Length: 78
Image 1 (cartoon, rainbow, N blue to C red):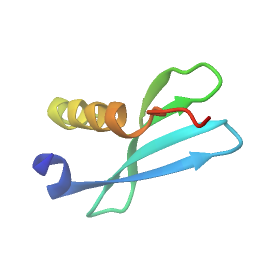
Image 2 (cartoon, helix red, strand yellow):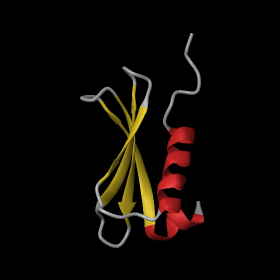
Image 3 (cartoon, helix red, strand yellow):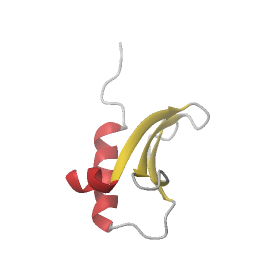
């Protein structure tokens, strides 16, 4: 993940309006959000949105890997 952390950082949060969780990719230099992975609690699927015309493929792959690890619920409460 070091390539991801050099130029970018991630922000994870919950979105009540969209009923799910997100992982944003933020460019450290500009402060702009350049991509987002969203996990829907309704559909139990992830989607990715890119807000910059070009991003290095390895950065997108690292973001997807981190989202798969960090976003979906890992256990249910009894």
